Amino acid sequence: MAKASLTDRRAKLAEKQRQITAKLKTLDARAAAQLRKDETRRKVIVGALALRHAELNPESGFARQMIALIANEIETAANPRARETLERLFAGVLPTKPEPLAEPDPAVLPDHETPSGENRVGLASPPLVLSGEDWSVAGKDEN
Image 1: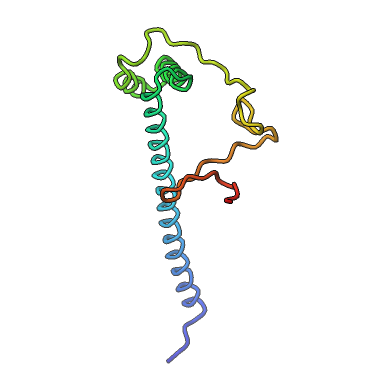
Image 2 (image 1 turned 90 degrees about the horizontal axis):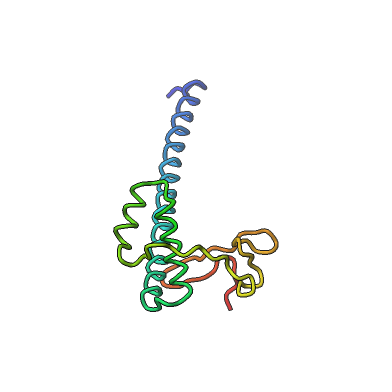
């Protein structure tokens, strides 16, 4: 049997390289899709917790602030579909004239966090991570 020429060997390797590149792109696309799904799930869970708290404690500062945020979003939303959806979902819950949004009181923020959500060394606060049924803060040591 004759050895394949260098040109043939190179062509076979180039084809393998194209196949591997295609597989990598597919895996990257799947990973990106999973990240989007996880982010959406996180938002749904946190949103449900926030709504539940507001329903159980309608006079709390959190509930009032959340209603003010929603009312403000309805007034300023650039996306008409989002505005219509919020108006429909919160009809009867929102005040006719929303309260102005209050600035957070720095005295009640955690020591490391500023009103803008950044910590005092200029880094964003660590995100919450949901693994199974366990909530944790990313980068925080478990004891």
